[in-house]
Amino acid sequence: MKFDQKDLKIIRSLQRDARINFAEIAKECDVSIDTVIKRFNRLKKNGIVKGTTILINPRLLNFECIASFEVDVDPGELASVIVQVREQPGIIFCTATVGMHNMFAVSLQKSMKDLSSLKENLKALTHVRDIQTSIWVEEILLCPQNFELDKLTKR
Amino acid sequence: MEDVDKKILEELTKDARTSFRKIAKMIDKSPDTIINHYEKLKKIGLIRGSTIIVNPQRINYEGMAAFQIDVSTDKTKKIDINNILDTLIKMPNIIMATKTVGDHDLLAIGVIHDFDHLMKINEEISEIKGIKNIQTSLWASGEEICSKYFIV
Image 1: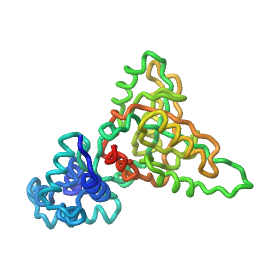
Image 2: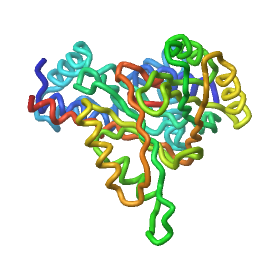
Image 3: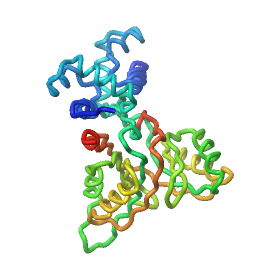
């Protein structure tokens, strides 16, 4: 798969602002608008780029309580527990992990009360042994630019 | 929150490059109305920006890791948790960081090429002044985080 400096520049521009005009990127990369469109479509086609999205502040949609859970699940029952956890309201992410605990999940809730009942529901699941909760406070910093894409062009 | 706002959020979450004209057509409003609502959503900070979603697996990231960090309580050192948070989010490969209340003080999520790379990032984090302990959890990068609020 070919990936060069121009692809990199296109991705970097769109990482900062996905709504940027393709003409602007074209000017920056010193290529035609057609080239930018073609390359963007190629990046999407070969799966490097999944799409574009807006970044929302969930707190302003009244999701005040954002928390992550590190869960200890009976080994061997992990896959079925993950399926059950993903069905819980407000769970936006759940995965098996390697480390001190074997599951990591993130949830968005409107209140502390909702968070507490979610935790109780999780604890009530068979094969869940223990849960460590971390409530995310203040601003959540996101930095998609920190992906090291530069290395790809050198390979 | 009006229906127009909901529609804007819904469409732009799916594809941030959707034109305002297209959204306007869908709900039978003028493009100007859409632009005004969009600008308002940006102004109040509900829309923090837009970004491209790259597939970590396709760019040689095998996994992702959560770093739960304990900040030192040593009173003789002047430790500012905000400085640590600031340093973390500027580190290459760290894509999310936040303060937490619970067993640990900070949570950072990063993208990982391989085990060597994970060790390197762990070491870089532990070198930040004021960090007492790091607890790492690792998972395969194929897992998708809901794109509504996160970017991976």
